[in-house]
Length: 76
Image 1 (cartoon, rainbow, N blue to C red):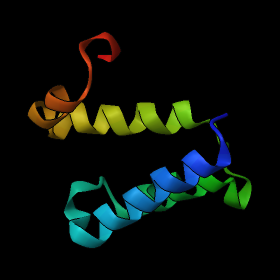
Image 2: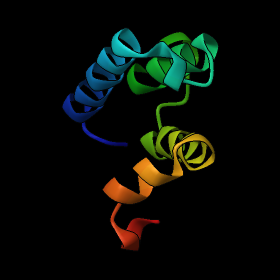
Image 3: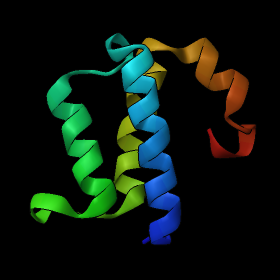
């Protein structure tokens, strides 16, 4: 598991992205699921690798150009 402070920071960035453009997220339910996973709320599994993988799959499908411009090749 990632340190709590990093999960909180990642979730805060995600919250801001939601405020600015909720349409970039798959659904409000998925957004809530990711938020719960960052904090372990409602018995959500807190492995940030699971959340990151889910987010990357969504980004690859809907925003491949953006993802490839920010994700190091070694991580792709």
